[in-house]
Image (tube, rainbow, N blue to C red; front, side, top):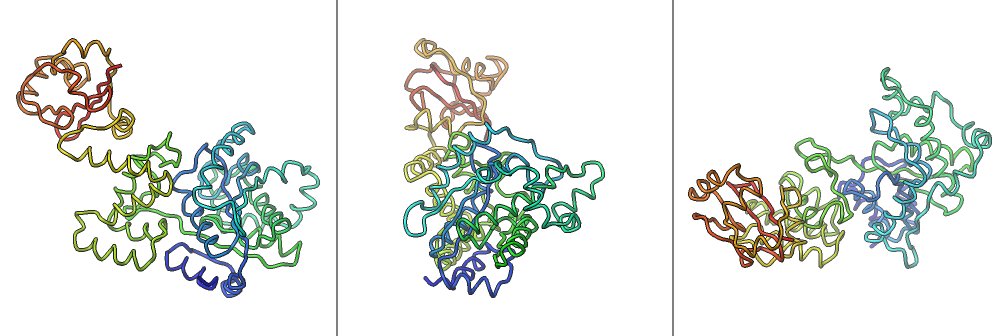
Length: 426
């Protein structure tokens, strides 16, 4: 694969919003062996799917023979980027940032390789920002930027126009720290390309200007589109919650289901952006999908690729087994862990294991689970066929036993079509 194809492939996949000096950048990439960086502020102890596009951009650049640098913002994370914000971010303590950094580093290794000729590098901008005194900072960095220049940047200008909120001097300074990061990486790693979301254009071009003014060299900017769904929602949110890469925050099953729920209008775009499937293979997949969209074959392909990439083959197999069990006639053969993953957001109750040995009536358990207010109401619901035990309809009240458990210690009640309840026996 020639390095000339780097930019054209990224464009074909819809990963490029803006580039600076396109012809010169194309020639720079054609020469091979470029170094590119993307920055992540460690505002949480996990990356989420909103971070995947820039991480995968680095992964694709690495496959083309270029060296990726992942910058984690130990310094900028303490400030807060005003880009795309209507209010100031909560400031993190050094201890919070250190903990977040330690958690994020292992996640990055799932996407980029830290071995080989063009091995990825992880750097922390706190390492070169914290030692610089305020007066030195003003003399070496601040003097190269006018307030007029900084105020004209979109991320700053919007906040300045908001008379109620405004922008603090702290956030106003963010641009200069990011610009200095580019200069530092140029000096110490010969980094010549910075990439980020399209809302980062002003910050990135400030870095280009600083390198030009202080080193007389040309470096480049590359931005990616800010993703929204076909319905206009911000990508990476599910019911208002971020979809995290940490399985303790978002289980592999939930992660798989997030991609399975992709709108038909978005699935081809997501396959191009997030998977390493060839464009030809994606075109074939979409052709098959168009013939039978109800089978959701494109979504299944997307969900499987993404879950395996982030969580591995075993986790994908567990997610598939849980999905198949949930939509089968009867829930059985699952582990407590898998059931908890599938039904993580449903009401649950924990009862003594001895209570199950005593053979409680189903109507009693329905009440204890909170599905009905009384035994009489539960009996009427059962007799009307409105109660399901492990996804199997029950039409008569009866005693329950160990044989009714769907997993080691859990049974699943359902009333109607979608109201689930977990009952655990500990």
